[in-house]
Image (cartoon, rainbow, N blue to C red; front, side, top):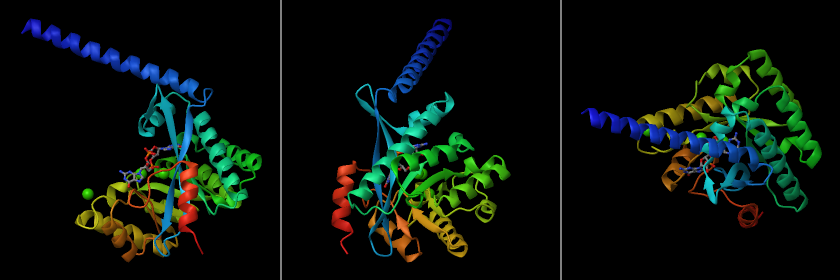
Length: 277
Ligand code: C2E
Ligand code: CA
Ligand code: CA
Ligand code: CA
């Protein structure tokens, strides 16, 4: 037993070292990723459930690290922890606006681009970053949507309100991302100038069979309608889910049922086929 105990200890210690060193490697890689231009954006189209047209797209960061694509769910939290998220977030905003401005000039009809903003980026300096990105690229604020999570809004009410009001003056719209999963307070919806709710994939998953998911989704749609908010369902994977959402008045859908996240070229092709007037 003593022998085994020691072996166990050694085993765990080796594993922990491996974890720590791979984390360090990733952190080191992240520090150089901007410089080495290892990031790029994928764009997932959003579809109107009313007329089926593409209403815009969401920009999603991709990172090719040591020859492999590492999921943002793995490196974004690390980037937040080690203070790299602001640099990465600035890059994402500029790149999305640059691409959006190019699409406008090329006559590709993409009404708006949504960009994810991490909680750590949601502070006064975000306004300067957004202003710079819009000015530098010529992308109109009216075509930009920022996706914020509820946790970002939990900080200082006065500050949060000021930032959101300034964005509103710039024409930039705000979507509450992952709605329903965070520390949801319906009071946020009343207090802050928010334009859209994105219903988290966790609730869309069980549609149209899971009675809890149905109840939650239907109530979110109900509240949004009364507050005049646009609703976006994320993670729509089946025809049945799309039909349920349409029947319950959801405005916009996004998910593998419609399209995977795409390269800019692929998105242009999708748009040219879908938005024929
Ligand atoms: P999110 O903002 O909730 O983005 C939606 C995620 O769901 C994306 O994963 C997208 O590829 C995936 N998805 C879309 N449709 C479906 C579907 O039908 N089924 C399933 N199973 N998944 C679907 P992705 O690109 O891996 O991003 C994961 C998360 O990483 C995002 O979740 C967001 O929180 C974060 N993220 C991505 N890009 C950025 C970024 O530029 N900045 C920041 N701060 N966070 C980002
Ligand atoms: Ca998002
Ligand atoms: Ca989500
Ligand atoms: Ca469920």
